[in-house]
Image (cartoon, rainbow, N blue to C red; front, side, top):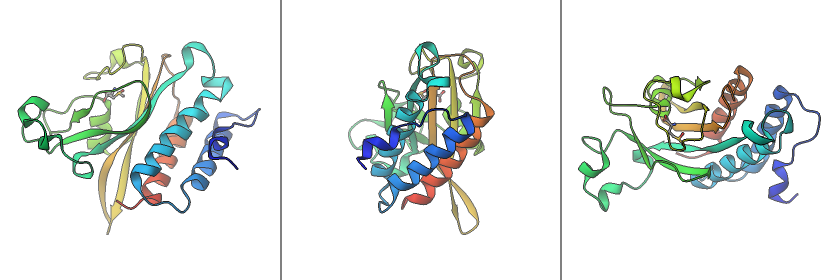
Length: 204
Ligand code: SME
């Protein structure tokens, strides 16, 4: 099967069946590949494309998902400190931040400060709390970072790796929607399972 066909959505699925389908397709897509850059790139594309193809909730007009991607703990990516002074990047020591990873959608902010006491935004909160954060109205969320003024709601799932019984936060999976209340508890459940699958499918 051509890789692009993994984003084809059979008609008639309800939300729960939709997420089960995406989960299964992602499992197949990531098989035999352990590189996290490659897997996160394909995961963001599969989730984004599948949501756009899922008519009942996201296929048309203002309910459309408009961003899907990853922010990763800075130690996993080359540091901008190599090319720019840390002070120009907004955090104090350059270490507590999430950097933009593979994504689908319009350009987004490059890094998110996760320094305790200075952290701001949905991604930082999900990362620091190690919990999925569902935001029905981004304008009502204290500290929300607006990468796209058209975004109305958002969901962010942490990527958690279990290392000998200790939970390590690697980054987050972030989705934005053009409608208020774009995401539900079913999306939270589906995406949390998908985040777990992605973590297990990669070498970190
Ligand atoms: N809204 C996010 C920032 C990332 S963009 O949505 C892609 C936040 O508040 O952390």
